[in-house]
Image (cartoon, rainbow, N blue to C red; front, side, top):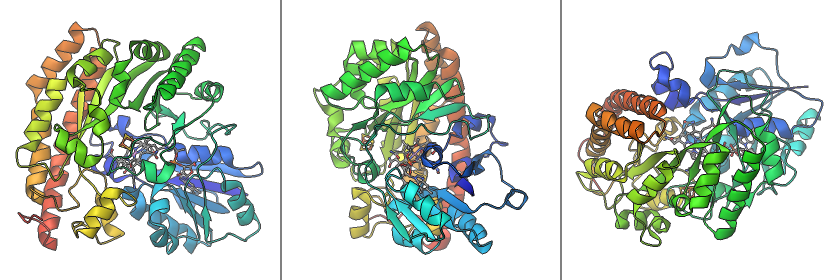
Length: 464
Ligand code: B12
Ligand code: SF4
């Protein structure tokens, strides 16, 4: 029996195609969900994974599968449906799972043979068994899995050519930011894989660089941090020789021992959600955690960087407290904090989040012709009405923010600082140029988006 698992093309990579921008090589990340699914598949299945982001696949030239499994983030949903239609037309049953299938079950159910919601560990063996016997159910609901004795993800199934391998060490996030789907999908309970399993799986990854996909690698409570330290110790001891990047909360900076161990274990960069330059903004997003203990963000960033770990700061534009000028304010704030890169995103109501419920109730979701409009749900476009910013203004704010932060003089100053501090200056330069280039390409995409909004009567200066 042949199982084909498919990661549909991702509009973020399509906007800035690999041929247009060689830096985009760094934006094609491994679909770990499918690799995990392959690991869960019982023997007797010949499994292949197709990642459409590596290049358009020639499905007719491939052997006919007996079962197709598709994953999708919301922004990939439309392409997922095209792929599903192609295989269903051939009479091949199609199962879809992942974040979009979990949060938009009814929409997905209309377009595939079977939907798997939630985490697949508890249901996937049943799904493939039912498929083998021709009895696929319309829906399977996975629950939060125990992360003990999980089979490792199949790192051997994807071709080489990715810059980063991928691994997951925890699931769930103890925080619950209004715009984030993680708590809705993986829950607020912070579940950790046994350290020995993680270290063993690290050893199976072929790439030297690894993305640790955990939403919050170190957690928020003392026992979470203690586990992270144990993990880093074990990784260093195992001499994995991997360099990795991860998402953490700002409390990463609070513990010197944690930082030392992380760096020793191979940590080279972290993504941190600062989200908003103001306390009101953090309150609005439900992320007051950042402010606990009256934190000095600049000092925190410096402490992390002293361990030669680069910091990417993420901010959201379009909050109810955001007024014209917020773009420059975000850039100034990111410059003041001293982050190596800035990721400025539009506040986006993703299905399944509190923000979605709120904006829907207030009739503020403007790009709402689904599924077609899901392609804009990349956090790179204003898909909802903001309180003090029109569509055009919000786009101009984000573009202004990027123009300021990624201006050549600022990049030179930042990279010179990294050179002086011996903090991976080459990587800092490459990532700054990559972000700068993508910000430029995003401006073109924004112009098209503005035109589309005007054609649809959503553009211009209208506000709530
Ligand atoms: C790693 C990651 C990325 C990587 C992508 C790697 C990749 N190709 O998959 C990068 C950095 C590129 C990325 C980008 C983005 N991401 Co992201 N990302 C994540 C993150 C942190 C982990 C995903 C992961 O690997 N999990 C580990 C695997 C094992 O879990 P999983 O994928 O959920 O799979 C399990 C189940 O869902 C299920 N399953 C999954 N697929 C399938 C398929 C079948 C057939 C079945 C049966 C089951 C099944 O089984 C698996 C095992 O239980 C999640 C947060 C999260 N916790 O999910 C956000 C998350 C998925 N990202 C999110 C977003 C918003 C984005 C961006 C839009 C944001 C941006 N502008 O950067 C882009 C969009 C890219 C795109 N596709 O268009 C949102 C998605 C919400 C949504 N409704 O779509 C999430 C949930 C975070 C959040 N804040 O809400 N992301
Ligand atoms: S801290 Fe990160 S993962 Fe956790 S809820 Fe907030 S945005 Fe989501």
